[in-house]
Image 1 (cartoon, rainbow, N blue to C red):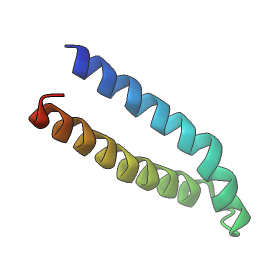
Image 2: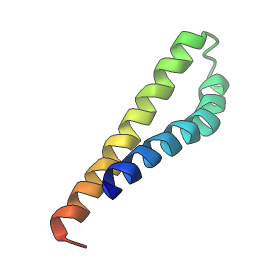
Image 3: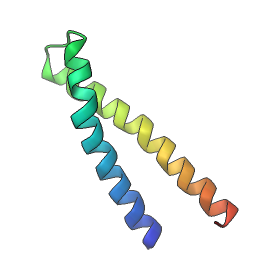
Image 4: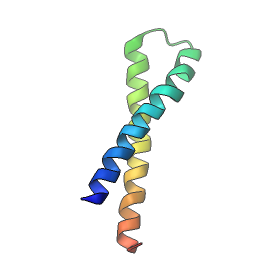
Length: 64
């Protein structure tokens, strides 16, 4: 249950981090449409979320 809570907390932190950090970068590239910006933000969040979950799985397999 602890890992599930950690993964959920990590997902929320990654989403909010991408909201704060990635959105200004995307807007700086010239994307004016909010739909495009939201799509790119969600894709970046998904990429980092997959990396984070993979690290949790590898850590669980190693037994650390």
